[in-house]
Image (cartoon, rainbow, N blue to C red):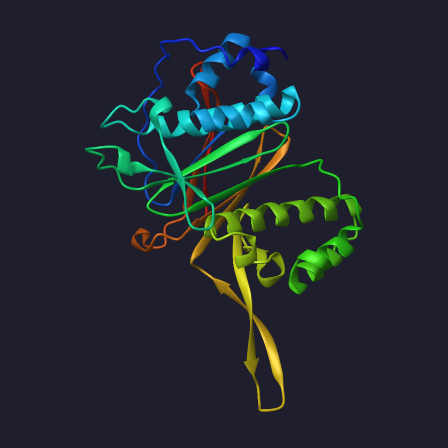
Length: 300
């Protein structure tokens, strides 16, 4: 795709306007995704390139191979255009958005550069595979998302791999599944959920190794999950027993995107929500071209 080598040409352009949207309400996550193979227009990719900051442009051009360059470009475009949609009180050109990283390296919008910005704090997180790029948005509470290809192959034996990375309870759950294909899919679902939690924490993987917490499906729900942590309880001075305690401070959702991917969302429970379920609104987009509402679901 020779367009990537042409992108360094600078030119001024008028961007089409983005349709403004209401900010997510409490306990609501907006999930946007783009499919790279649906973005074929060379002129559109050139427009996207002009949205990026100089360091972002450099990172795109440093990627090896046209497909990696294109996906890196679409990821930064998706973040910038998604965030710009929600700035209703003061129009924000996606080109002017500035970002910073927290002390653990998680990207955030740097709102200090914007005067008269009275919006509540907007949080975002991004995840991608070779064939899908997604961005999740919340207000008030941190969000972590992860997307994984449903057909992702596990190079090693699934249980052996799980024993290296997962909690004993998760390994036990996987070991009860006799069908190898079902077992592989459940492994990927757990991986997606665990990634989302670590990313929502925003402290890096060393702060929450995968084997130190357990993700369990929530009984009576579809796509709802609990976070559990193992604690040692003394029965007497000689004997200790381990108990898995569910943590209600985090809410999870697992759903499918484009019939090809699992997407996991984790948000911190909003103390002012009164125990309300998490609502997830999913939209597919090609920025500046089309937006499509895909689904609206609640997760207990």
